[in-house]
Amino acid sequence: MNISAIKEKFLQLFGTDCALYTSPGRINLIGEHTDYNGGFVFPGAVDKAIVAAIHPNGTERIRLWAIDMEEGCEFGLEEGDKPTKGWACYVFGVVREIAKRGGKVGGFDAVFGGDVPLGAGMSSSAALESTFAYALNDLFGLGIESFELALIGQATEHNYCGVNCGIMDQFASVHGKAGYLMRLDCRSLEYEYFPFDPTKEGYRLLLINSKVKHELVGSPYNDRRKSCERVAAALGRDLLRGVTMEELDGLKDSISDEDYRRARYVVGEEQRVLDVCAALEEGNLELVGQRMYQTHWGMSKDYEVSCPELDYLVEIAEHVGVSGARIMGGGFGGCTINLVREELYGEFIDKATSLFEERYGHKPEVIPVVISDGARKL
Ligand code: GLA
Image 1 (cartoon, rainbow, N blue to C red):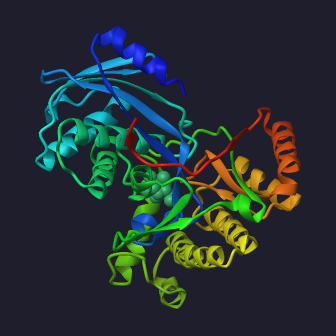
Image 2 (image 1 turned 90 degrees about the vertical axis):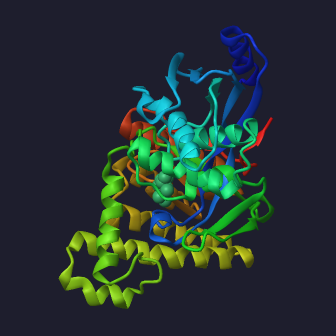
């Protein structure tokens, strides 16, 4: 990413010094659509991030420039000042959520850009929220603790961007640590770092971006969440976390088939995360991979958040003998995450690229990932 271009643009537009902050996108090894159900997730931050140059300007106005879109936006600090540009709402939301928690943020100037692919299921929006939440906390000396910064990003999505997301993405973006995945219990909010270096065992992790753009705003994402809430309520629970398959089956005739299948996916996924953590501790990456495939087909057939392009990428992976592959993130497009044995790496990339292009007329993008640090000042 071109950090000096961001600094130069800042100087050109605002003519002052600035501080630089960054926060990354994320992968998630397993545990998808479990966060808002109070279950487990297993994400890690990656080496693709948003970077922002920021400086308080002593006024009550925020002036932003998005370098990748070559577009600016100016707005005030009050609730009625919500900008019309979608991307600016992420920053506005962070400012408002800080204010709601009693934090005093003044006006500032900022230029930002990044290399988290948009709409690829790698949480570019969480990276943006976390960059600003972290930066404003630091610059205005607010003393907000790190988990609350993640909650500020999540509340921004809920209240200013129309996505009732869980906490995984913002949590991973803020708390990421190079070389570690994190298992977060989304009910207790306790988390643990797991060392993760598949190369030691002869594997590599890579993402393949179908380039089908996913759009979670005002989307079926919120409907999935409602299905889960209906089933939990029918069981007299707040969350699906801890519900057993037997309990769910007992309810089968009194809920819709769609709600039943969605809940079945979530209940299965809770166990799969635990299986994967145990398998990692034993160095059994083949079992990790098997659970990834199960997650994929659950997300595709039961949760119905896949698409033909992603199913095809997973079928190619199965065909080549890749250890694990699945859709990653909210779904409806974006990337697959693949756990590939070293000796199959080249062959898989070749086959995935050529077969996919043959069928869909465009090449998917191959994205190797490195597990990296979370939000920080540069
Ligand atoms: C999106 C949301 C997350 C999570 C995932 C699915 O990325 O922002 O909170 O629900 O989808 O696991």
